[in-house]
Image (cartoon, rainbow, N blue to C red; front, side):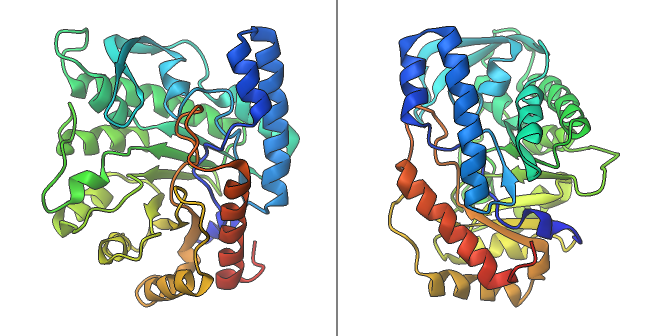
Length: 342
């Protein structure tokens, strides 16, 4: 799309929390924590500007994990003492959710006051939340009903974010790529068909001001092999403008995910591995992107790390310095591909 260049250098949203913020959260003083969060966000904006990112986020610094904007800002959910398979705290939906106010809009308003770079907001997708929080006998009649209620809340939040100047909104559903495997993974409480229908509801922003992109990240790791028909269903039924796809391992499945994408969609490729400190070889990364250029117009593309650097505040994948070096490499790749067009 014509204005993709505005967002060439992207990242998923969650950054490694600074030590001062971690200490303030552990101390348990609400006022001190609030000030630490504000300062951490200010510093994060400066960092992203120095790294020449074409988007800025609040790093998820005011939140415990990438789901927290919804789970903390919407009634109807209860945190349990259990842990999910991926290490995240287990939450259960006990009633249909109701928003208690803006989820991210207040924080993104601060971003627009701090910089002219496009603010970006990242939220968990409604299908992901429904698949992981629905439990029979606890409130909602079905996972589909729960997902549809969440989709309405997230669509309303998207509309508010756009009204406040946010131009790039990313929904995260880490379960979807597992459903594109030739031997699909466990979808959780929501079937593949229902997950597509629910997430489709959350991206149906009818009136998109110029420059606004609604993106979807369907997972951080591509399956070993892709079921082409399922991939076509994914892209065909969820009308997201921008697809944030893993592209850091150089596998045929990663290439197939991009090849299956319709021509009218943007793509953001995770070209560096956010889970290991070693830096990728630039020639290897460029070779992978050259392969994409054989069948896609790279003008519709962007680059990013492969995933969040800290899905959970207390479990960063890399150090702050390693994170900085990875984002710097993403910036270098972008300039190799597109020059200084952004």
